[in-house]
Amino acid sequence: MFSENLVQMRKFLSMTQEELAEKVGVTRQSIAKWEAGDSLPDLEKSKLLAEVLGVSLDELANHEPEDNLGLGLAPKGKYLFGMVTVGDKGQIVIPAKARKIFNISPGDSLVVLGDEDQGIALMKSDYFLNMANMVSKLPRDNG
Image (cartoon, rainbow, N blue to C red; front, side, top):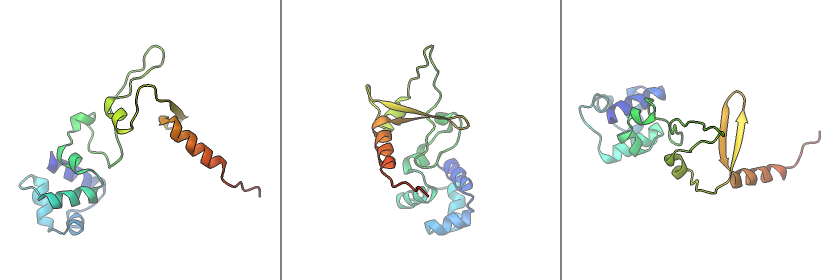
């Protein structure tokens, strides 16, 4: 798990073992051993690896591709929560993990945004309205 995630994220960032080793303060051989699963870094080096790779330590150590529709580890702050089915009336169930991460509770209002090329996005309405209010107060360039 750890070794596969380490290799995947290093390659995703187009880094060589040598470049990663330099950022973490170890030898290229240490990175090679960690990627091969021959050894594991200590906790401090693991935390630094996660930081350099832009993922959480938990994800670096525990991510299973089966939990993510068979896909690899996503960069920190990016999520794939799984698939949902659209019901007869257009309703979907937001996955529990997404509700927890984004603090969505029953009764919350969401804004549905759309882009014909990129798809649909959901945003908490209070955040969207605050952002729209800020934009409306910006000075206009009339020239």
